[in-house]
Length: 238
Image (cartoon, rainbow, N blue to C red; front, side, top):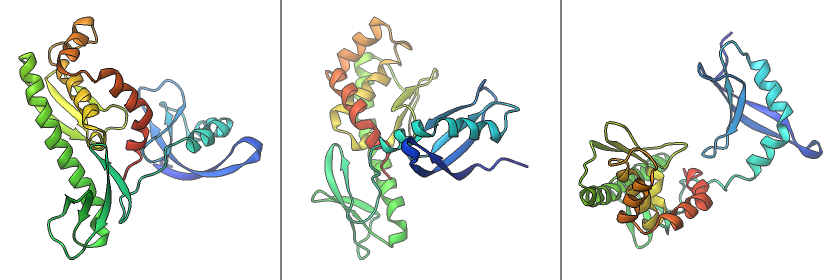
């Protein structure tokens, strides 16, 4: 029988405390052993299964590490749902989501509010669409001058919903960024963009690479610390 992609499983933690978790089964041809991780975005427990290893081995690992799983789930940042009345940051500034079905135009910022028009079932999607488009606009506004300063050019700029990296630079010169960065302060976004643009000249983390980053932005240390502390909250948005 094929393995289900996901299921709810009850795990036992410390002092016999129990909780039901969403478990995602992920077969991997490259994995050498059964492993598990917590997805910071949706709070799911991901179990990686190597070839010819079945669900029983994954369940055994889950139950042996039940306390670890429950502790890490409890430590996740609170979820930030895109619903009417919720507060979310845009450029590091708080904005209240305001559903107004009588308005037109999808979603737009007005007086420190993110106004969302149309029917309620489409609210969350329209918030995501707005943030994705706004992230792309802000990222492109930074990529162009930073690339010009180093005498390089990006082949393409893509905005995605990445799980593990805020940005990346492919060998062909394509830059990719998480749309969730639009929620961070502008100086954090500036650092991430500068970091990836610097890879267009140096595809490494050599001293010359970091010299180029320093030429583009003064925010490296503060931005790295901010992302370490606040990045998990961005991953829980939506």
